Length: 347
Image (cartoon, helix red, strand yellow):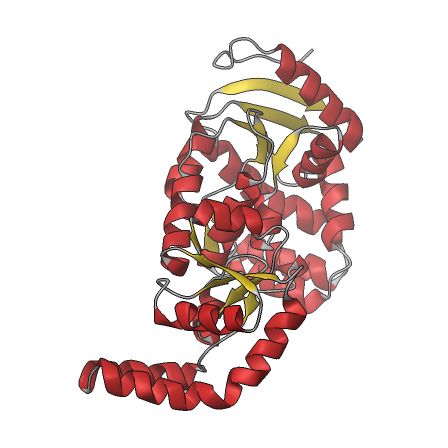
């Protein structure tokens, strides 16, 4: 039975997804949560693809049977182990021979199988359509070191809907953002995860998101999605610089010097020769606060420039980093905001 991408995604919350594409295809991007269940290895797929183009469909089909034959028992046993209440979801690239063959095999073994109509290609089209929907954003802004991510999480903990783009990208969104990463997220996978996250949000509620540049680490926020963020009301928190310096010292000061040095080197052109050298000297002498102070000169200038042309729904001066309190004040103020296009200061 073939089902639409939207139904496939909904069922994937509770049923296992078997991705029968090659490992190389899977690694570029997959349905989040899917299990790599390859019918062919990367080498085998390349061999069959070449044979199909040069010799024809029938020889390629027969060669595929030769390659798959020894794997059949193992595939059936593994699928039965993964199945939930005897049910699995299956897809390949276009919903063609690979997924249909596996689905037929697993159905014969007694499993109930649902196929993704149009395969992963159709899923990717669904992803892009989902990201282009008219999401109602409320953007949390503030200079580097304002604790925006922690405030965003506090907003979520108080019942509002959020999207943490940095968590989905596994990067904190600056030259130092990679220090906390544990994996490499591909562009496709970032978009896939974002689309599914949005799909599973409660409907008809504004979505809080942290103010981000178009690039987060190695991934790029889709243009149409980012443009909608830029057009959304901005709730700007203004945290005392001394507090931000202390916050950044605590957040990044425990990382190895070599990793912090590499991050500073990435900014050498932007910082200029003198400030770059000074930052490295402060680091070597364990003078973290003056190092952070110098770095903020660059980041603050960059962020102020990014605010040009944006409409600010509220500016909230902050003299502490009580994240729960800040979140509560933002939510209270945003719920009372009538004209989001008017610049105000929160009381």
